[in-house]
Image 1 (cartoon, rainbow, N blue to C red):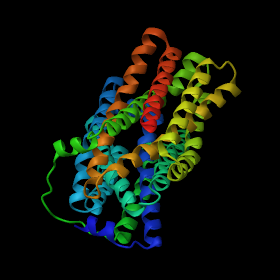
Image 2 (tube, helix red, strand yellow):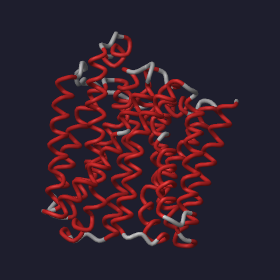
Image 3 (cartoon, helix red, strand yellow):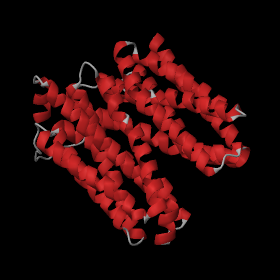
Image 4 (cartoon, rainbow, N blue to C red):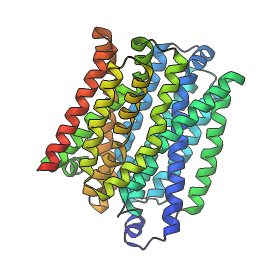
Length: 394
């Protein structure tokens, strides 16, 4: 298998660097397309005649497709080559973003979202597994740089949306994403040392689940990070709403404060990844979770803007630190021949947890208000930290 040969071959430093750059920028580009949707949705709904329920169902479909694709994409990349999944992943992402920009009706918009979810699923686990292959001695740092693409994408989307909505039609916002994705697709195809393989790979979900959940230690760690993703799903979707409804912020101020989360994450993820390579990763994760819980509590209890910014920075620094560590602990525990599949299965669990978070916040906020819901998220972060600390002390 090409992937197996790649793991045992001596990899030149310039090749590792090129792969890290193109994969990280690819993640940033696809996240830009994803994060363009929230600020553009009011215009899209008005133009295409979409109800809020239809948009909600479409976004749910996007999330489910993304989660379900994780495991088969990772497993197939183990059996064939990473490029066999990454090349079509780039192409499907391109098709999805093009359809979103050209959507003339609800069905085309839905098709674009589904393709975006499939493409993201094809891309996520194989790209992380490839970096795991190439950076065996510094995986957390490499994945920290890679996952910072989420924050680059969030900041880029905010800037693009602000300019486009003030000057032209919402469709133009997707043009730079298409251009960048096309360029990165070409660069990946030119730079990769793997080829696209043909074959009939099989799936062994029972064996994968058996490996991923083989020991109490692994079950504890995956449960802790699934709970963390649950918090992320609730926090990121309702943070601006908390500021507007519970703190009385005007929407532009809430949006500007929300951008602080991405700014913090842009620097925090590589730093946390580097620390996790040099120190016990679980301890770095515990420290981040405790800081995140403290930040959420400060955010809820704060009365003035400086305190709210402090709470935002603490919460962002704490939760952004988790992403490279959550992936690295799975990669490090996985056998070389099943790294992608095991990572895909674990990430599917993470993403299901993330999908449940918004529902929790929405229900609790309806009954008791957003401050109570966010205090519940802080309690979940403390539980996640307790699980990881318990595992570290075993």
